[in-house]
Length: 398
Image 1 (spheres, rainbow, N blue to C red):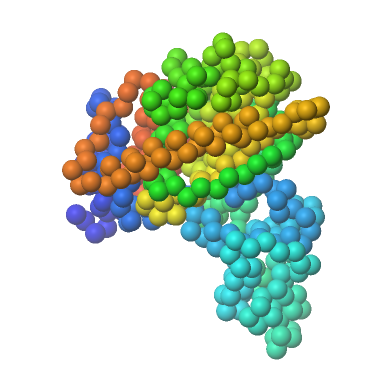
Image 2 (cartoon, one colour):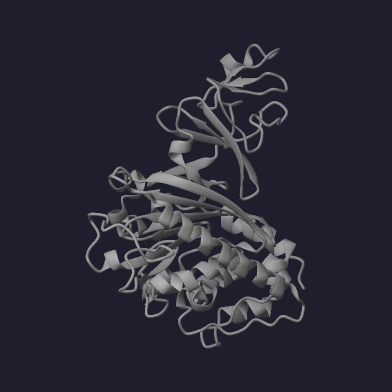
């Protein structure tokens, strides 16, 4: 194999990558190495996650003036600083010697950003304010030696970052998604719970699992009692997202363990949509599952070829939460159960594809969104570049 070939071509083989893009071929899942190779994983984390837009949380979690939080995102160490009017995101490293400014997974509140190593001080805007024994530095070049910014964007209450700084503008990346989700008032919802999981599976297996319900009857008995698992509607996407809907069963009022739920719906939802469960995968790292009465999201952060951090949040409207006697437990309990079933299935699949004898099987006819995702991955592999909304390009060229 040519040493100048891209990581996907070296790992999977140039012919295999080309074959994945062959439309006439019977659609199949990716070969096992796509889920186990450390080299391919690092390529994907760089090309797909670091060069794309990835969510790091809710803006409200960091917006208070002086709030400072450090976290890892797609393998990058970043610092989020609240200004009271919004947030700024920086590389979590002092410009002097690179010492972390805030300890990992730690959140503090301080009027300025302070380095504990040599006591350099920065404003919440990133400009250097004080540098002991470099008395003229702050005055002469406050921004030139300021913290390195990380490109960020706010959308419907979420904070996204683009680590490479060269992704398409965020609105262009989303395409029509903002309009499609307008009825759910995402930016106005209140979070009622968060669960963090470390799933022993490659990030792609988790995306693939989300994009199809072929597994639902056998994997999710509770879900299958309240939601139909076939005859769904695929959504027309003009951005880097995929999705579709499935109907609630006539006997169910909501997605809950017993099908019960409030007689309430988001005011802007039409009658048909109010009886549907809508699934949106904002690629590569955010799932938005919207029902008539609440919204559940999952954020993905790839940790290793066989490990992915997943953060699940539950959201409701103020109107529903403030109504007499209302409790959101029915939704939280339902998705806690469903999450664990999904993570067990994904982890089991990871163990299966790790066997060198594994041969990728065909996709079922109702796995259209999954097939589209795999085609977009193969396209990225062939171009040695990040994901692009291939479905839009195809429509434009038609």
